[in-house]
Image 1 (cartoon, one colour):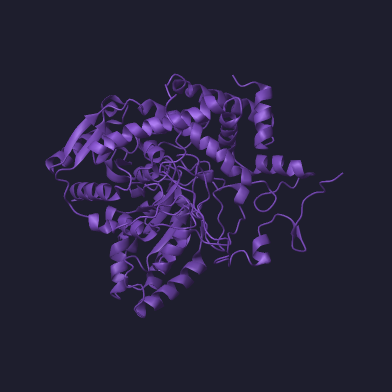
Image 2 (cartoon, helix red, strand yellow):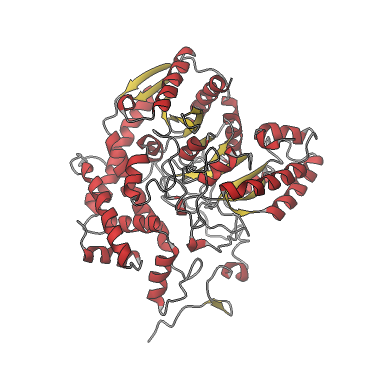
Length: 482
Length: 97
């Protein structure tokens, strides 16, 4: 049977009904992954023996009648390598953590295991999740399954490519400025960045802690929603996690957008967008209108501030978060260091890649005493200005709609000599906005460009408006896949 | 423009040793990034409160008692990632002269 083409929920239902065993499918997937990996390099660590052992355990428990309320029990999946897995190497795609073995699971891993997930390994990414192409991984880049000359996007590039290639049925990624949604778009899969505080960050290696969220990447809206239902919820071990009633997101899977109000940033009308993306975008707007939603163009006064504000604040948070990597208690230690100071300076010089170093230096710059007010404090205030404007928008509209990226997946080394141009040319302020204001957002696949590379559309909701984006995404998916 | 001495003091506070070719490219990239922040300079923010987080949080307190501590009670596990260790201690070069 060709498992690789099945969705996670289809597979789980066949496992539940004893048509397929979790062991059989895990064996088949491991074999398939090994065939694909030469070409794609999605995995940093493949858990062949552990995965199979776990499949036997889960299958046995399913046979005994356990996991009755777990819609994804027995389904093989994999996890971005910045999420801690007990006794399983977790590298953040960095030399700094090349041999790091965590002593505990991230909260999301415990939740997935309680739901009968079979974890097949740890997925490649940009080093410390900084980047949008997965090229900065210490272990080498992942390739786009649609065309291996192109990047899979990033930073959760391995997480998106592994799902797109059918290596796993779903995965976890993390998103600080688009790191789930942009690779999902480039690889033709569905990814959700939840509302800040919805999914515990306990055990997520911090990049920019007031922006980071873990979220699912899957083959369609229903699968991604099922995963989100498993991993959501308050966690006392994450003091930024929000204690509230989280109803079932799955209940929002209805094909009905009548009466919904959708806003589209006016600047998309004349932004330099790939022509096939524009075509798809226009089609999507028409689909929503035909289905009874209102779609209007909206002007945002603060949108030009989004990218600079994001870079100032995330770099500041990076420089603080990455200061823990000192070569003393864990992580890389330079063999050439002769005294304590040299341990710090040389270990960090040799352990971090250029992208991480650049952002640490930038963070140190904006936080230094003579620049603090000009840059850091200023950006904190502008974050509120931006947030106020978008909160106003969301008091009138349910959804902010636009392409996830203005381009499809770019070629390797397209920005080799200039990380800065890479930020300017390929970042989309309208993915970053969701992290700046804490909103939930989702990318769903929507056709292909002339080279056969996938296009993605993004839906952003108001804080805790997951149900709105899931409903509108589900409704759109019905139209574009049927 | 970031001067050489400024770059060195940043590297000093970030505790990262920079070698010659790093210095040229980091300086160039930092300059470009910092220039891209200029657009924020004239934004009026006097009466706007800094936004530290997207939700209004209160401090979270709990009783000072150990709970579910299975990942810290084992010295071997706690030290297994230390790059250099001896007899249950993490080893570093001599600090006192």
